[in-house]
Length: 323
Ligand code: 13P
Ligand code: SF4
Image 1: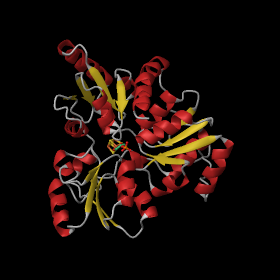
Image 2: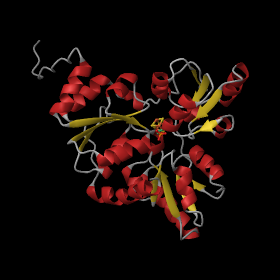
Image 3: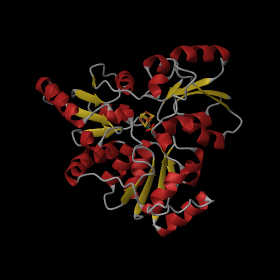
């Protein structure tokens, strides 16, 4: 039987070379988060945490941004730099935090809170949709959340959408009154505090470095808490030879490049038989899909202009407050 479907051109044998050629032809830049697979990190023009990538995206002067991360990161790039075409390897690469805070439910929540606190400040984590950002006064990332909450010392604050990051910020900024939206990251909530306690007994000289999206029982046992970029920097400069790490193991790549002799151990998950501590969204991106998105310039990430304009101000405010 013959098919009328057009033949799909085969993928080139050397994808890295083909991607480098396409980047030139399309006038494109590749931005990648630290949770991307090693091969993607190696060919990216910039690798960073959410804050870094937002800053870099805002300044891109190429026609195309190929964003290897998750949807809210690509959306943030589009909001900050709307004249660039933003494409992603896989449009299904979302985030449980963004999905767990729908804009209509969040708007209803804010309406209730404003009745009690008319001078409310809404601080939203960057891991939210553009529509939620548009309802916010200021955005934060894990790297500047404490600083941004401290800035509004005399005002009631709603902090959304990560309950664990919120609890950590409340403690660090001495703001036990933070009103926190009860979302969580399906990756970080899996880190097992009991297994961490056992690891610390087996490796008494190890330093424990965790992301603030981890549950409090993990953070309480950590010597250092910070964003992916800060974890990588601390792992490199730490005198410890063994590092126990409470975040996605995509960060291991940059640590190994700088300090290959250190022993890196990921905190085990609740269910040790699954790879639950790999972000299933971030890991949807592959070199093949990156090649295809640069070749076809899709899937493209767009934001309705009215939403973009309202989401831009809180993002710019974050960048001003954390410069
Ligand atoms: P960073 O801002 O630390 O890179 O975190 C992003 C993220 O999604 C962590 O799960
Ligand atoms: Fe979202 Fe968690 Fe994945 Fe980060 S690790 S992108 S917070 S689901």
